[in-house]
Image (tube, rainbow, N blue to C red):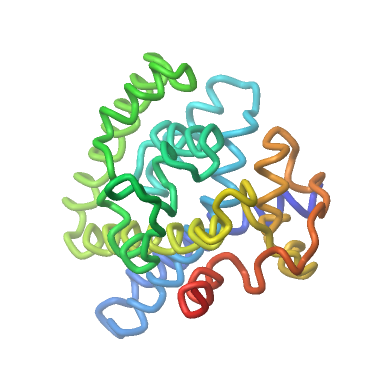
Length: 263
């Protein structure tokens, strides 16, 4: 468990350190600075899928600390934490079916179609429904609440205040922050696509990547089928339940592109 918490802390630290390193060398080497921001965005993706995701399912049981973490993760993702909470709980309710806000499939003229991975990843910000509608839907279906909507609003205010402050300090830093958030959620979306290859629709609630070294470093993040089946089980207690031949051949971040070539 100590090893798992070490890796869960490592990815947010990498996100912050790489981003700041990129900023401080921006004037000396802008190309290397851009590379560092993109690598920082990759760290953001793993931070969300591992560390920030863990906070959705498991709290510290200390309200003040949990609220501090909510605000910190909001800044590090550029998205109110409880809006991400809404998206993720909705994802578990619908398991990538129609009704899942982050589904890799869509309904067009009554027919189910696979979403294109490039559209899904590059235009991640073009949600199928407005945030207010998503929150109201969650409230109506009782996996969200008015209290959580209020928390979401406060988290949004903290993000805006943070952006104003860093913008006053440096407009370049603000633009780099926007780049971090854009590329971070692009990687997050590609990763999610690999976790729910649309060809699996109706077969699995998720698909897994079983490489032992990968799951050691990324705290069993490859066991996504198992996470959907046992969402209240800590990562390090998840066990492989599927035949490798039925699941991902590559890590989730890349397997969606393999699927695109083979469909």
